[in-house]
Image (cartoon, rainbow, N blue to C red):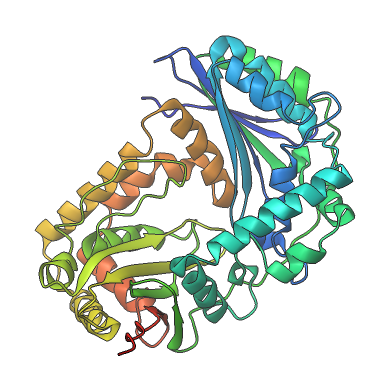
Length: 431
């Protein structure tokens, strides 16, 4: 599959990236806005996610409920996501139905209503979503860890927001946020599928050029460096499972250090996918931590994870503990393996295997039309599309010394947060 794309910017500031893929008569259309929880301040956390929800509540042209029916009748799928750095809306449709998502996205870029009754209805929905998440041990643990890992940066708040803010945000707060950030100059349109790029560009320009340019607020955020010291978070709650999560500061997405970290992740825990929309999976049975954690029954499962973000975020390991073992046993095992890697104890064969697995997972997450449109927009949020096209070659350049350096730089035991969730002790039966 060719990586050739057509890229331009309309007069109103909207960036457009198009990629022809003629393997099936479908087209995937995405609109990405450079706004997420990174753009929020205390008192208004969760506002980006809430605004995303309101984009499905209708315009004068497309009232609430009409869009779902129209997309479904056209044989398409659609959805939206809010993340740390961005909000994205996508539709994948038969090629002869693509006019609908083009028109509706241009319309709701400027004409969403934010009716007061819809705002209040959605407040109930989001509060319920938040309360449901609070019943999940890993959500509670992650929320506590993020606050320990960041002292000031907005990444310390969950994307869904603080409950106290969700109770007090107003319709005017939401609408102001929408008008500030849902502007063509703050957006990237990506499209992949069965079309002629030049003809499609003319078609898109005719629709989207009608959206007026608006000034974009300047966002100045100071990135945080390594976690200053080892910090500990411990929670307890209902359930019967103990969870361990360890996090370290990771490099920003456009930092070249992200590639040795990807290989390090593949060696330690098995490769992680950077495609948050959907991808395949690869067994982690050949990773460093499988034998000491799983084969020895210290844990029942484990994984590694990192994301490509504008500012340095987190690399994390999550371990689901075996009920007969304590999380500190897993911490010792993880530290031993990291120490070995830091000393350069990596064979060329192990390095090649890790790179091959990371490449394979990357390929699995890039193989269909919707994923191709995803990658064009996702990489523009923190870097550029060349990051995607050069990903494999960047992995291939990683050396043993690069991996050892990455482990020493980023996975330092003096600069991390260790989080543990323990279930409440079982109550003994009364005799």
